Length: 199
Image 1 (cartoon, rainbow, N blue to C red):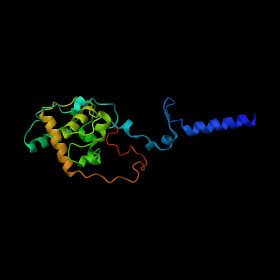
Image 2 (tube, helix red, strand yellow):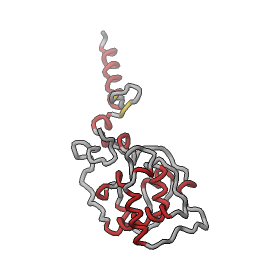
Image 3 (cartoon, rainbow, N blue to C red):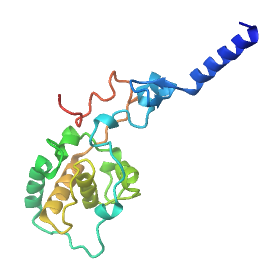
Image 4 (cartoon, helix red, strand yellow):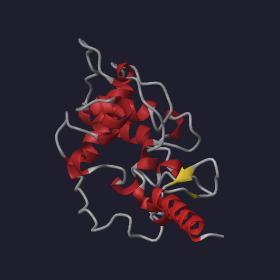
């Protein structure tokens, strides 16, 4: 084999290595070298195992409060009590065993913005529905449609008012966690995922 052929072969091998093409389990799904070496290089390394994160786009009309809506107005303590029951009920979801609390055990799943008064920016609302700002009741509807895989609640319903009231009670005591120096530094970045399927 001539020296020039060897140079071309080595150059090609180096080019392939530099431009990616490491395969992780599925030869149909090329993964970049950076991602192969660092599973946290992806946008969300836990999305595949997290029903609260994975999924497609959501129609804005399903979760945007219609103009002129008269939200249910009841006694606050009663709404909060009902809201807590609904928060822990898997009956609102079409996914077996999934309830609001599944994604929010111990205040998990809330971003730092949750501490701010509504309306405010929410990453999931922006990514899934293209909304820059969202109201508290609209956020409940987004969770109903997306991770819960259900229909939105009727806008004037006691149930929507109750879940919104309970979420606002949680919000009062919520304190954003200090960001870790490297959120992907843990051994398994998906280990602390409350939405991971139970085995």
